[in-house]
Image (cartoon, each protein chain N blue to C red):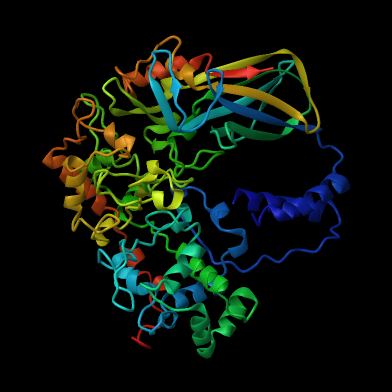
Length: 372
Length: 238
């Protein structure tokens, strides 16, 4: 905004102070994106070659719910990313059109503007790339782009592409761009926690204690903490954005049993077992938990961090150095939370549910009542 | 980025068509070179501190704020919105470009290691202050001024963390660098080089032995690191 304001001052200056010879630039029609300032800046995070337009957003929304993008016209992106479940599907592994299951759990789609390196192992660089992959993937939507594009053309999508991208030629790239535009609008910022941050909600004692515990790295004898906020950062409660800093080994398995994680992308042994730290926004709606959906409930997740950590050579340092009681070096790290503290953390996690987000009609299925 | 472009078209127009009373300005590049003693710093590389611990880092970020340039006539130029997050992004270097500095003779530069003022306790985005950048605790506590995440192997060969998250007002440390002789900043090719020395965070005056203490976050021990980076951690290279 500062830049925009600045340029309007300059325009003013030119018009009044000098005789303008230049042409007045018409601003492009853009979909209005808003987010609380405590999420951090985002304008520069929108790719220059895929800025928002209302038409692009609307097209992306249709494609997100478009079953013609799957091999047998039975699935769309929304099959595994359902709005009512904060864009997850409630399953550990999601079966594709041929009934085959994937290897990781479908991720919640939320606040994607403040993220880079998508999927659990970070192999996708952009929302654009991530968006087209499941269409092609043989165990997901299992469709070729030639077929998918043909079906979209037959359904008359060319005009929509024309309006969104000034070309009526439907391509894989433009499908990805439209899907990305829609998904970047999936901003959740009206949970009880947000209302509290904006001074509109008075949290219960338990929620307040839970927030403190969530964001506190414990120091034995000095500070009690749940050690969550070291990885789930700030109000976004998601991982660090830059590079692979937001990828952590959170002690799910020992060296022998652990999944590759980030190592599949970087080839580096030190990255084995490191997975993307997901946003905890709407976490109460996105069970089961972890990349493989191994935990059914948030209580189990809290138990894991409290007393279920597995030692390994890549276990995150901030977990090793994070307990409420002193432990001998090399001992299996534990948090030593009390039952009340676990309840408080759970209360805070429940504050992250955003009813407005999961009921926002702008994000819902535009074909509802048509082909369902 | 789109909003920037019109500026480029307009700026020359203003400068040439209407600019008669615009003060002459210079730009100044500050380069921060991350070192560990005499070595160029690298993530993941093992270094030995004064206590003899062998350690490596996976993250090292430093906030500096309120950069002031002092002219030879004592006039002070304050960089606006001066909150800068310094990290080894370009190999071990970080470049900070300061534009629109009044041209002239300068005798010193000063800034703080840390985040000065009420902005530290706010979620507003000012300069490089950004609640989503992995440096904020929260806005009743403020930002981490220095963040180092790393590890070392102790005598029993256990993997242990080196966690340095230092903030709070007591650890806000003023840095003043007087130039050997006045420097004339004019035009675009002005540069000052600084070194940040990792090892200095763990020595002078407090020699830190990770076997005894390796977790410095918001505790009394954190202030020991603060005392260490007050002097010698940032050096001006002339």
